[in-house]
Length: 263
Image 1 (cartoon, helix red, strand yellow):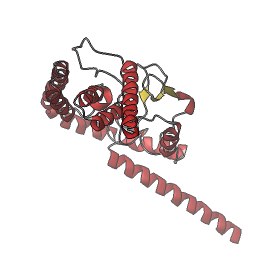
Image 2: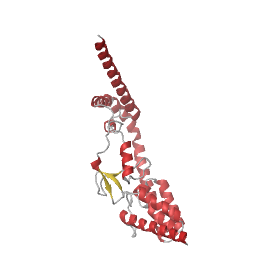
Image 3: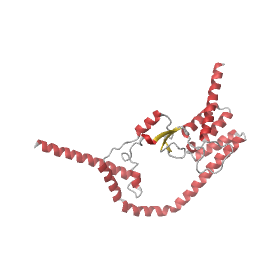
Image 4: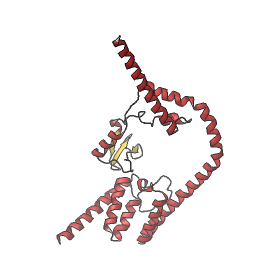
């Protein structure tokens, strides 16, 4: 009798535990908007639905001094970055990054139940999506136009800075590049802007600012030009060439500082 009651108690506890999991998943679905029509793909981004990327898919890419997922070709795979956008560049950083990724925490049955819950909302969301999307079409068109205008303004500011730099107008160049960053903060990661900022600071005698800019380039940038840039300059270099030039310049700055200390 006691054993039977114990078994029933264990079963009840298991049911309650599974119910709690379903409630948490349902709450996540509701709060994250994954009960919407395109939500099935978004479900995979919830904790417990995405495992840590297999280690064999993560490789160090020397061309950008960082780890990539999906290959070492500079044109393939995404560069791994931490929460603040800095590239994962050392084995220690990679270990911390992979350990922070949530592994699977829900069972298969619970997972498919979550998909079922999302599916039940599909008819409702088809209607609501149509109701909300149709009025936003003009806003989408306007947003596209504004995005194009912003990208053009970013490219113009970057190009103006490069032109001022070639003329030796360093303050004007730095002002243009500051405006470009204000318009598109991601420019730090997808362009060589910090390389040229470092060059301008160095030529202006501001060694500390130059070193910071160079280190920002090495820590964040993975490309020399954003995809939406169309204009080119004669002095354009590949990322590897600018990286090597920075290493040389940092070495010169360090040797110069050591020489002054020795004196």
